[in-house]
Amino acid sequence: MNLYVLKEQAMIGDLWQYLKEFNIASVVIRLLLAMTSGAIVGYGREKKERNAGLRTYMLISIGAALTVLISLFENEMLSDRWLSITQSYSLKFDSARFSAQVLAGIGFLAAGTIVASAHQQVSGLTSAIGLFAAAVLGIASGAAFYECVIPAVIIVIFCMEVLQPLEVAFKRRLRNITVTVKYLDKNDIDTIKKTIEDQGAVIYDVSLEGEDPNDRYPSAIVCMKMSRDKSSHSEMLSSIAELPCVLSLHELIS
Amino acid sequence: MFKILDPLRDITFFTVLLRLILAVILGAVIGIERSYKNRPAGFRTHILVCVGASIACMTGIYMYVNLHLPTDISRLGAQVVSGLGFIGGGTIIITNGTKIKGLTTAAGLWACGIIGIAIGAGFYEGGLIATVLVLVSETLFSYLGSKIPHNEKFKLLLIYTEKPALNDVMRFLKNKRMSISNLEITGKRDSTQSQYSAILTVRPRQKTDRDSLIGNINEIKGVVGVKLV
Image (cartoon, rainbow over all chains, first blue to last red):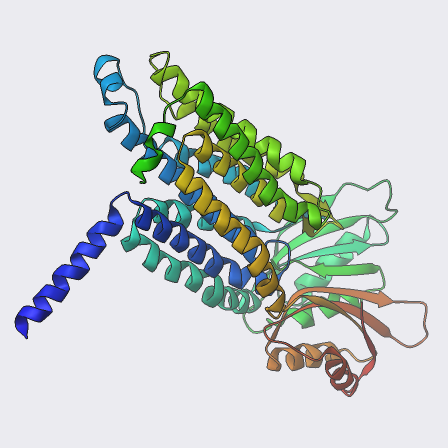
C-alpha cells in the first residue's frame, strides 16, 4: 500500500518533470494553459464591455506563450543540431529576447485602448492592464512556470472581480469629490465656491477650463473635501445644481 | 520535438521556400475568419504579416548559422513582436469618445506575426499548434463569448421636481445592486416651478429588466419622468 502511494507520487513527479522539459506534449500543455489563463482573465472583461473581449485576451496569451517556445526551440537547435557551429563561432544568444519584446509590444497595443474623454476622465485603463496581465501569464505558461501561473490567475481574478466593486463602494464613501461645473458667466464661480463652502466643504483645487471656442459657457473642475457630518454626494451635487447660474454639473467617478 | 522534421530545420533554398509557403497558408487561414467578418485587416494583411515575420526570423538565423556573423539569432525576430504591437495599436479606433473598435483585429494580427516567427525559425510544431488554438479561440470562443450575459452600462435621464427624489432614486438603484458611475445634473430655469433633470450612468452587476426598472423609478415620489438615453 505504502509502496503504491510512493510509486504514484513518483509518477506524478515524473510527469511534472516531463511537462517542464521541451517536448511536444509539454508544448501543447503550455499553449493550452496560456489559452485558458487568457480566457479566464478575459471572461470578466467580456461580461462588462464588448471592446476587449474573451478572444482578444486568448489570442494575446497564446502569442506570448509561443514567443517563449520559439526561444526554447532555438536554444535546443543551437545546443544540438547547430552544435558544431556554436563551438567554432562565438555565440550570442538570449533565451528571453523574444518574450521581452512581448512586454513592449503589448504595452503599445494596450495604450491604444486607453481613452481620454472630455472632463479629464480616463477610461480603458483596466482593460489595458488586463491585456498586459494576459500577456505576462502567457509568457509564464510558455516558460512552464506552472507554480506561478496557477496562483497568479487566481490573484488576477480576485483583483478584477472582487476588488472592483469594493473600490467603487469605497469611492462612494469618500469625502473627496471632484465635479465639473458649467456656468453662465465667468464671475459666477465665486457664487459656486461660496455655496460649496456654506455646506462645510473645503475646496482645495479649482481649475478653470479655457473657454472652448465651440462652447459659449465657461466651465471649471472643482476638487473639494466634504465635511464629516454632511457627506452625501448627491445632496452636495443637487445644492450646486440648484443655483440659477449653473448650467450643468458632472461628477467624476472613474 | 519530432526528429523526422530535423532535415527541415536548416536554412536551405528548399526549406526557405517551404517556410514561406507555410507562412502564407497559416496567415490566410487565420485571416480568412477576419475577412469573413469584413474587418479592416483582411486575409491579405494577415498573410503579409505572417510572411514578413518569418522572413525576419529566418534572416536572423541565416546570419549566424550560415554566414557565421556574431549576432543573436533571435534579435531580428524579437523586434517583430514589438513592431507589430505598434501596428496593432494603430488599428484600434476610438469612436464616440469612449467606444473602442479593432482590438481583436490588433491582437489577431499580433498573434499571426508570432506564428510567422515560429514558422520562420523552423519550429513547425509550435506554429501549427498555435494556429489551431488561435482558430479555436476565434471561432468557438467567438460563439461562446456572445453567450456570456453582457452587463453593459446604460444612461438614465431622470426628471424630478423635489430635491430628495434624486437621493431616493440613487438609493433604490443601490438596493438593486447597481452602481452609478457618473452623475450629471442640469437645472432648468425657464419653467415657473423648479424642475431638475439628471443623467445617471448605471452599471448593473447582473442581468436586469430595464423596462420594469424604469417603471419602478417612476413610482418614486417627486419623479416626473424617466427614460433611457
